[in-house]
Length: 85
Image (cartoon, rainbow, N blue to C red; front, side, top):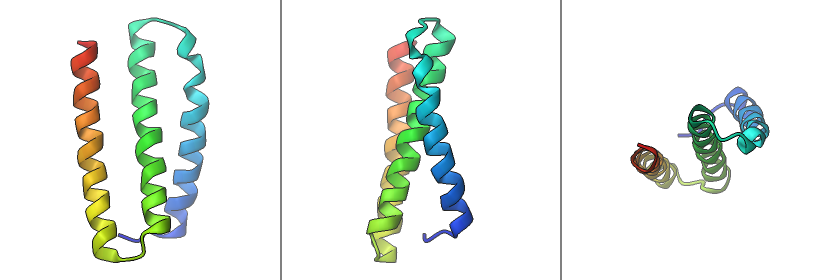
């Protein structure tokens, strides 16, 4: 699933912004912790997507890895929600 350059530009900015938004993790309100975990998941998913799109050149393998990555992010979301609630 090769994407165009504007998606990569937006993805690059979102990865950097989500990294900066993780800094207020010193606050321990429940809402802040949920926000930080959400930002970490977005940061992780977009970073891994960009790695897969950059280094895997076979289209079928790339789509398979992106599918596994989507399933992994859903599983991680489930585990984090199970941990917090």
